[in-house]
Image 1 (cartoon, one colour):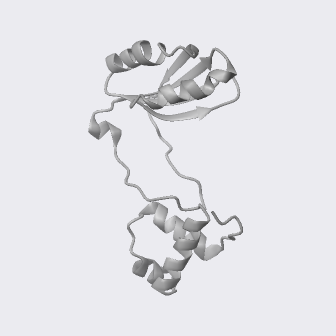
Image 2 (cartoon, one colour):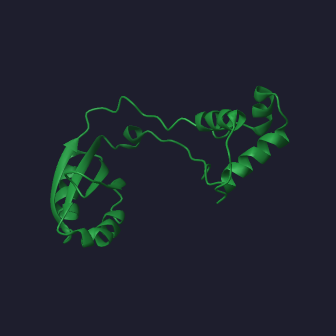
Length: 153
């Protein structure tokens, strides 16, 4: 990773365009920003080497795949030393789609996606709360997700 890389306005424009559609051809970006396709390629490669661009992905609609329940679970661990083991066990659960090590009321905060409330109940009781390192949990069910965005370059 190149930590000496300094982004400029063109790099930010390229990032913004690729964040909107990662499949945009470099030739199209070159025309849009009035530079050569080679310049776009070099800039993208430099941002990859600097660790700014780490990959490209498609976005799916969880509801279209049958995942109707999104919730966040605040987890209190029995002790701080239990964090690595708890995270390893949470990582094995496909319903856990994000996890954060946090300050405040919880040691760990996870995002869980399930197909139903019954499915969530099963995951909570039989899979998450049965993890030995977990002392207690608090579940917050998401009613909607009105803001979804990435950081701005």
